[in-house]
Image 1 (cartoon, rainbow, N blue to C red):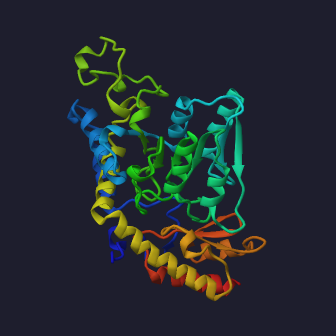
Image 2: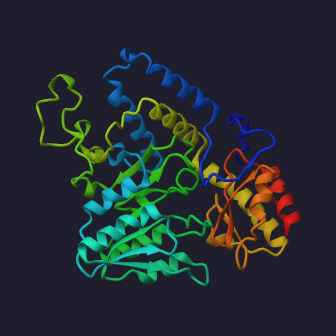
Length: 377
């Protein structure tokens, strides 16, 4: 079993941070790397041309390892909305076809589909909250031969209820639909492989569970879709961009693989070193090891919650890293201020307290959270 990694983070002893689903902290090492990277900008002559490409290449390699892909399948993007927009620009949709989403899905994976549906005369169909808590079943039942796109996640962001992407993928393939995934709430802390799921596009932010900087995320594009149209026409995405002396010999062709979908200025000399350091750290720990450790914490949260009469999803219907403690009629208004007053940080999402521990948490953090929660009930 993986041990708590709190010593690698600068989290004060009187702070209980159980909100990685909101934003993850940087490691102390990543902060030092970032400081050195910022300092280098005072000396731009020290930044070699080769670094425009070496830094992204390192990111491609690390993110590909994270999902069982090839480095050429990865692109660097600033946000989930950017990655979803790439998918929306390239997936064919006809009038009357359906784009399927989940109720209360995160907006970045909703707005592009609403715009696309309006442009194409398509229909955005929302799968409602399942009474039995089984999102997988509800989603699969909604997919039919009139479905063009299924846009979903591995877990509902509000309370961590699980969606079985392998089963969802089987149904999308059977019906000829495209599968677009936002894995911002599970990638890096829950095993995922494109070999098992085979999405058309997958995007993830780097600043949550991947413990990286803001405005730096990752897009997977399946090989079958890598001849699509990018959002930007940047110089660095074009063929022979390495040759700075000949950049004005304009090229019609793009770099190979998913490179054409990169954001401009992908070589971010501050964000990229930070991101690479934490990606290497997570890969060294092992995603399965991280998932096992976090499951021990969310199982403990479930045990403590049910012991005081609160509801959580069953073990088979939740992801290892994220859990919602459900209140009928909503979370009492005084709970959140009481927790914050005691330096305990979680999120209120809908009728749930969303608790999202990471590798810097331990059972003592859970106990502190429940000490305050129980005193306020």
